[in-house]
Image 1 (cartoon, rainbow, N blue to C red):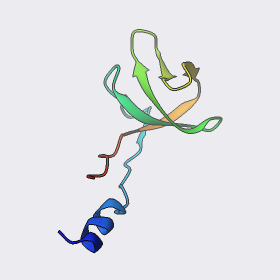
Image 2 (spheres, one colour; image 1 turned 90 degrees about the vertical axis):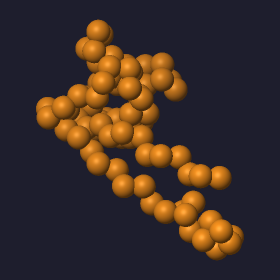
Image 3 (tube, rainbow, N blue to C red; image 1 turned 180 degrees about the horizontal axis):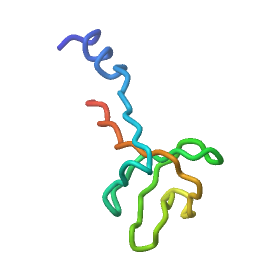
Length: 77
């Protein structure tokens, strides 16, 4: 693969499919993108035993989550 094709593959936008929490929850402990009106977009996980989403990077409970999405595939380097 030449450099132009390789660079275009790295810059290909990811398609995010948001799921409303009223429709479906992710698997417990699955790392996902989460969206809330107060916090915007963050990385976290649904912890079913605790009944809430947690953000792992800041070790906090994320309240008011309305949607979640699976993490996109990382770029191939």
